[in-house]
Length: 108
Image 1 (tube, one colour):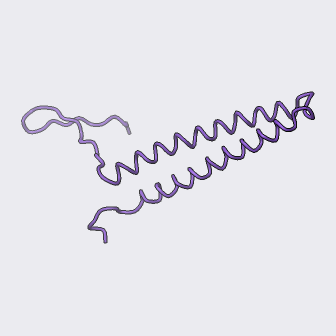
Image 2 (cartoon, helix red, strand yellow; image 1 turned 120 degrees about the vertical axis):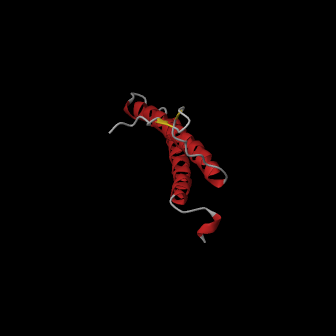
């Protein structure tokens, strides 16, 4: 099966593409929120990975004792980045859970 949309002819002889599903209101807001959150999550995890790489170099480096304070600071910063990612992942989870609920006023 092809993922290419089918173009259908209408009765007046012109071709048209299938209508795209449009979101408005809270669904559109939640979509934008989810996209923003995943961007922040990726940034937080990327920063944590960069810091972990620096920690790795410091732990395996020849002067580990001399830079112990810096390693401790980097470790705490890495943990903060991971906690930030965790926080935003939980927020994203709440949004994705909300996507499965019917948010129309008639749903009650």
